[in-house]
Image (cartoon, helix red, strand yellow):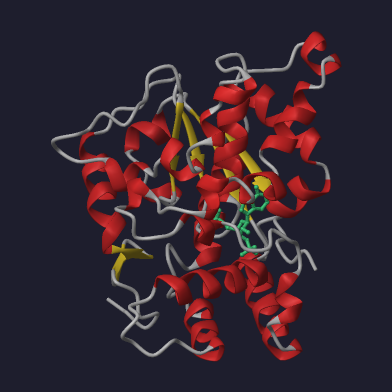
Length: 302
Ligand code: A3P
């Protein structure tokens, strides 16, 4: 238990991960009670790694024939209410986390803590992660806003120390990533492993990759009509962050604990350069290299 980030919900150290009490009960209950179906598609990520974006993209991909442009839920609801984290909504009384006609289920849960049936079944998993330096900077800003207002804000240096020690939401960050990375190597048809920075470089390419992977490939006709570009545009940081719903209001499925606009800050690669000293960056780079050594994975993007 460590509430060093001054958050309303403390972390519990559970099975190797720091997990907020906000999420823990749902994770444990789902382990006991949730039965995965082969048609389920899990959207997984550690916090501040592109969750909002991948939720929007996958939702837009799988529902692209359901809505006229002006009726798309992405225009009137935040991606977190369209696809709530299962750990926040799963309960004994309400184990129905599937939504009619939408095969997507979102989670921050580490791979090893997913319900066993998710690991064993043929359901799909799309995972996104990001350079830990940008994750830390993003998390620092996010936590500074959701902390208990009566507590002193945490300094960047203190927060950095906690992140490096793995004391952050669903940390240690590297362990979260490695769980899904190993699963993607063992079962490449089950787990699609993505990086935020790659998706930024050529979003259209990744929209097509994701669509194919989850079994909703674009037809030639759709491609010629510019459907891929439309989805890229509708899910872009610029577009989503300027919608009224994402500027105002709070996330219903998180009991309104966080404002929708907290999920849209800068949406850039390499913003860490504006906050971390070279020594800090060097330290985090070294931790990342050491933790990932021998895995074949790299995360230090810039
Ligand atoms: P920054 O704080 O670096 O700007 P998550 O969605 O996992 O909570 O991660 C939030 C991070 O993703 C924030 O990063 C946020 O700005 C960025 N983000 C949110 N929506 C995005 C989008 N549509 N495209 C790219 N980045 C996005």
